[in-house]
View 1: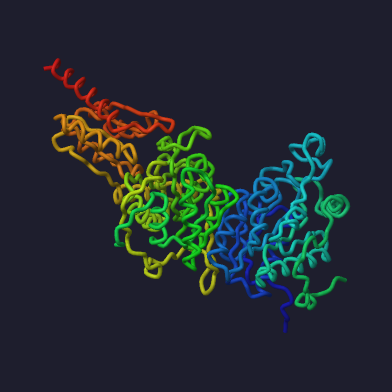
View 2: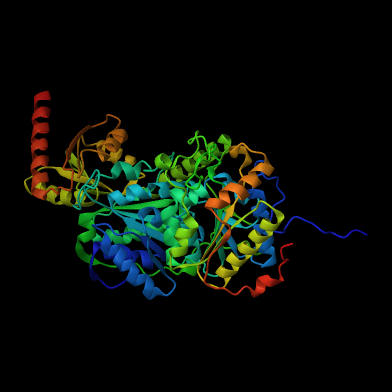
Length: 259
Length: 362
């Protein structure tokens, strides 16, 4: 007799990820699929993927999805949620998508208190286009458009969009996590669960910023990429709950604690 | 039909949209069409199941419409020329993703910020797709307040039937004009054909996705050909134009929208002087009424195209005629509105010139 201890989540399609080795998207996709099953919201979920590496998220997540133009996911999600307020509407966006070309759409969706959940995957580069500087590239970090490292006088400061969104009166829950270790992955799952619950409770705009490795464009090994996040990126983008107007975490207490 | 009401053009578009089942409107302030946005804010709130959003930008407004359209709702946005330029990204996506939506352009003088006076400078932008890629949008050109209502009703029908964005191309004159209007009865949303492509959560069915990214060139090519086949169907089924006193005409004026309104007055004037002049008015600018133009050309040697721009529709007239008749042009750009008298002078001057020429040929 065998006991099944691990399987593909119900809302993850039987498909091979196209993501590079060591990329965080595959982990985050799986977490989202697990949460849909655990919260029993997969049949109510409607997702908006971005332009970027995760544009093909609909090849993996087995829920309704509608593609947005680059940066406009929060506006598209607004249109969906307003017409179907009892569905669970989320966007899945990269840092270039959300914090550069889509800044206005994101800030105003948060400020209106749109009851949507935003999954903000921050890997500090434009991945799909080949590793150009992103709004979130940290000071000194090399990219194809910052060959000598991000130079603040020339390139400006890395932007802290989550902090900016926390100021908006309509945002309810914002947390920054990472997927560099089993512990951090579990915390990311807790944060994502809480974000979707925030939407289910009708509290307003929720967002989880996930620091995620891009070994291909960073030109580092997978392990060194995780180490880079923990040692360097978190100095600019510390892992923490940035805003939480709900506060009650009772339902999450049952989730496995950190070891 | 409703009883006859005296209403302003912008308000009429809003009322007709709501009666056509529009339940989502997103807009951004821009003159000369703010009354439409204001009308929608009040009307949507009164409906109960309607949604109005004053968006942070034209980009956000059109993308909110994309989201609402994905849910199968009848959705609309409106703006004026500079704002429509910003919406072109979203209109291209609507076309590629085969989503129905209605976009109203109350044209004003341009290019650039231009002014807020009535113009027809956006003909190319509307009829050539406007955004990036190989696509077309249905373009409807009302020339009266009653037609603003009738064509708004049709715009929602066409958008749903063909799953494509439809543009109502009006101008500041149409928008600000007060005229009597009768509205169609409200649409029963429950009786509309089901949309088996919409996103509403994969409950009891396979999950769906709506996209426009097709990395495989063979698939992208097939999407483009699929759109072409759809556009051919649209061209067969909806092309619409009006002829006025063309039967015995020696000269036919072609104009649409406000220009057609002015031209009609001019034709009446020159007819009273005994000149055999008629008017051919395209109501659908895309698809363009090529056959109607060719039909009229069988007995007419000279066409005069009058536009409130420096010459845009005139190219479609020439393409339709393929050299069959002579095409003359008169235009006033930049928000200048000609009087019927001015156009009557242009018509009679051309008419006499052409008659003299014909006399010499005999």
